[in-house]
Image (tube, rainbow, N blue to C red):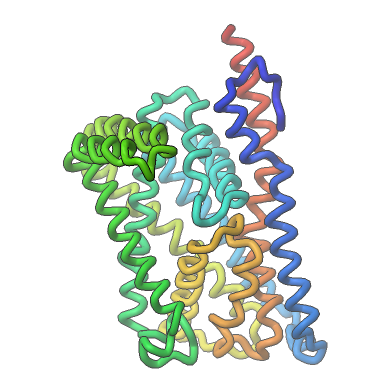
Length: 363
């Protein structure tokens, strides 16, 4: 995806390099490497033979794919809402592919937010609005987890994190990771929410103060830019009424819910005996959300490799025989993760060509 350097500046070139299509090799190798290792370690032909392709299998896998499409539409709706309908449905769906691809090839602990600002900035919207879209998206995304993670834990207790856990002390390190995760989310969301909606000047001054500390001097430019971005985004968001925020929250909650709900239908498709009862399906949903959240602490692109490796530990009391867990994990990742890598390979080069062509035409 390298373009003519005369059409892009150095900062933009760095962004292009960070999401170049060749980067899909890393998460693919990580994911497939772990899958290969797990298959070599636990492959059982008798157990795998118990997966029978029936009309039930096709039906539930079809629903899982449909739900993933609905998730994309929810995110596209949010993009329309946050851009104040500056983007058409088609453009919003394209931008979500770019955003998801950049997240898929970035470490989960970093994400694709910086690249998302770059994408949006190329689409002829105000820089302040591009920043507000990304910052507000991060706030409502985190709000979803702040509400749902503790709720799921209250309903199921420690068993939502580990099947064999009955009290918190049974969880060991993963329990402390969970508490740390929720705490960081609450602090982060409170900080950004205060900056966006209550007193952005205080946050800007605080970030400027941090940038002058000796230990953080190398982050000076980033911290000061973040402070300026919060001021601009706050000014942009203050112009919207409650319906704007309601639609942003509803579309976000719909997108995240469908993300994890897809796993329920994959398990229903491939496991011969699984309870369809609401509470049991809610537990499956909860385990999927917990697993995703815990993996955010790790540095691999899109959680590649780690998701496949940890999957069995979260579901070994639900998936029987346990040896088919790796098959289910692979199908889930193919639908929900690798699909965006493939879509990005198709969409991103064409998007860059259009941007470069438009720049040349504007000269």
